[in-house]
Image 1 (tube, rainbow, N blue to C red):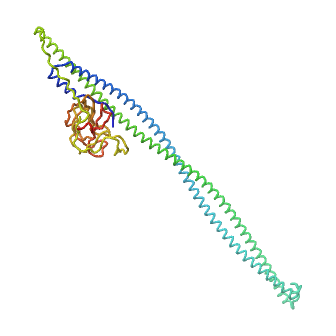
Image 2 (spheres, one colour; image 1 turned 180 degrees about the vertical axis):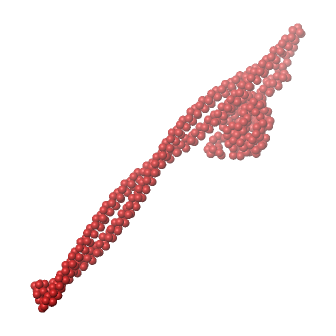
Image 3 (cartoon, rainbow, N blue to C red; image 1 turned 90 degrees about the vertical axis):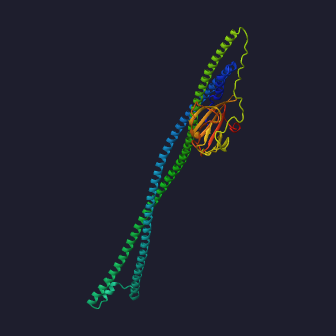
Amino acid sequence: MKKVLSSLLAAFFVLTIAAADFNPVSAESIDGLKKKIDELEKEQGGIEEKQGNVNSKKNDTQSKINENLNNQQSVETEINSIDKELTETTEKIQAKEDEISKTNKQIEDLTNKITDLKNQIEELKKEIVILQDRIKEREELLKDRLRSIQENGGQMKYIQVIFGAQSFSDLISRTTAVNTIMDQDKSIMEALAADKKKLEEAKKEVESKKAEVESKKAEVEEQKKALESQKHELVSLKGQLDKQMAEKEKLMAKLEEEHGHLEEIKLTLEQEQQILNAEASAKKKAISLAQSKKGELEQLAKEEAAREKAANNKESGSKKPSSNSPSNSSSSGNSNGIFIKPAAGPITSYYGNRYHPIFHYNRLHAGIDVGVGTGTTLRAPADGVVSRAGRLGGFGNVIMISHYIGGKSYTTVMAHLSSMSVSPGQAVSQGQAIGATGNTGDSTGPHLHFEVHSGGYGNPINPLPYVR
């Protein structure tokens, strides 16, 4: 909760004024006022010192906030740079994948071509085998013919066949037959040789194409390897960039969380500064009232002294017993049971460290919570002066009252109110209706949050020993 010092000593002034109106003025009452003025001025000095400390802390916090924002800006710039590089790298990876996809298509096409060429070669091999079989058959036929000639006449030649003709017409027939046989044999041999040559050339051409395609395939596969290597480097770079991005985002989250804490501290200090200003203003008012009352008492003392002197002169030296002045009726107070509970209801949460239901971490619960519904009448826990009545951060609507009881200063805090019927500087009496409970500020449901600060705001104590 927020930190500030105590305010006015209303109960004391009520008692002092009442005594002054109906009793003779005594040096003791004037001395008492002087003492209270000195105490108020001392407390005012303490408030001014705390105001200076708050201003220093506020400036220091603002400096930290500025540094935090600069760090956030720097990290944001780095994140943007990494994000840009990540985008470029991702685009390059996609480009490489497209190139690899095209290369895979080329490899697939080339593989299909190689398969086709292999099939062609196999077909040509089959045709060559068939042709070789035909050539072999023709060679066997020629061998048989030559073998038959040898068997029928030894060294007989085609000329003998011709000269063996019985007539001219037989000669013509024999000559034609010999020529036909010789032409057929020649044509067969030439055709076989040509076919064999053609097939050999076709086979050689196909094998050459196959070698060329295989070379192209090997070249494309090397390109694919290079692309895969480049892609691997890019993926590795992307991994590094992703890691850097995660680290920067983690740092940014930490800075944003730190910034939130600093802003909360700044807000707390600003609220503390507001409360200190209100306390200082109330303290000045108290000093002014005390000094005014002291002046009135001194004037009354002079008038009383003059009356006594005149009475003494009139009675020619006879002494008139002076009236006993009343003792200063300041409350001796009691360390226990000096406050009433501001609203009737059961205590639902006690003073001490606890897990905060909204912020989800352990912190000091600087007061007690009273389980009451919205609109329940709120009463002043003791006589005092309102130092603050308004909206204040997590408190929501809050009333703070300064008390002076038994020679000690206290500040009570009542928070999460739905309405307030008092204003700063207003004197209140114990049990007086000052507002209504509610559910404003950092609250999970209707209730009254009640704090007691000893020596002024900023020193919370357990309220239970002080509440009757």
